[in-house]
Amino acid sequence: MQALARYTGAGVKASAATLAGLTVTLFLLEGCGGGIHDDTAAVQRAVDHGGVVRFDARTYYLSRTIVIRHSNTVIQGAGPQTIFRYQASVIRQHCANDRVFTTTCEVEDKPPRRIANAISIGDRSFVATADVSDLLPGDWLLITDIDSVIGDRVVADWIQVDSALDHVVHVRTPFRTAFTNVRAWNPGHSGLGFQRIVPLVENTEFRNFTISVPDAGPHAAAVGISVFVALHTTIDHVVSDSFNAQPLYSYLSKDLSITNSEGRGDGILSEFAATVDLTVQGSRFSEANAAALGLDLGTAFFDVSDNDIEKSRNVGAYLLYGVHDGKFHGNQIAFVGTSTSDYNAHGILAWGNQNIVISTNYLAGGAGPKSTGMSVRSSAGEIEIPSVNVKLLGNTFGSGWALDYEAGTQPGP
Image 1: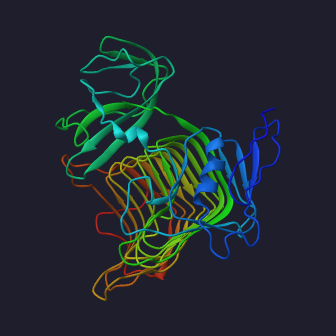
Image 2: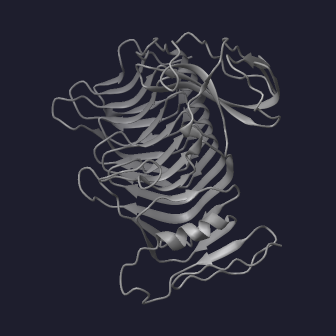
């Protein structure tokens, strides 16, 4: 059993530890500070200890990003009345004040190292162009292919080192994703490379609370929850409402589960980018002036099922830029509005996807004389990303669409 943690600061108290890990109950005494307090420092101190951090049902006022730096950290609220209210800033600093909660962003401080060869599914090694003697058995590596036109990753996966000698890296399990290695190499801007994931933050949980980032002007914004280069993350029974940024966001992460949660906002969708082993189930998404839900930039091995898209504009949901190997199943998409009277809404865009199944979704309808329920196309980029083996099965459409399927998009296997 870990020792009892004590925190200094007005009105902050901690409970005793448990065998399952440190449990901290954080609250500020009534009347402390007289009205609205800035609770950022107290919340960060508690989170920095790691373990299970419990928050009572009250409003916590934050002005800087709460960074999860330690594995096995659980942010546990008491239900919807545990509210983290965030003051967004016009002057934004990456991972310092541009999101409410995030796992650490340090991995991205160093650009990828170049990989010399193409990688096929089933390969057990790759060749780097420089020495890899710093890699240790068990290290996790992030393998990514960046497209300079799209401006980001379009293929991504995690792999674990078995051994490394000279320029050759052997991995513990066979590659499940192919990397073609045909894009020009420009470190951090284009081409196939790898990054060692240090520090590794894993087994983070966000449970039972509400995030509120209200409108603070046209240029002030903060993401609700950012899962950034993290392993084994859970978001459950969380409501995240962010006016000018992604309510829920992941990037370059592995094994993210989102259940029974809600992402809502005004102008930027909940986005899951370059994320593998993603599960989104039983959740709700709404955006007043944007698409409500997006998978993009090589997100793969996913199950997005039984969710409700309650409000969206121009597009209900999209899967763009190299999304592959997964299913988008049993989701309900309410009527999709448009931003202008001459725009035609789309229900689901599937552009540049491989080996995915879009099945038994219900799409109510969309605004515009040429509104379209589903569109499957290739994606333009430094190299065109085709849509291959995209199966549209058993989807149903309300009467509000001009076309159920875009010309050239056909249902069936």
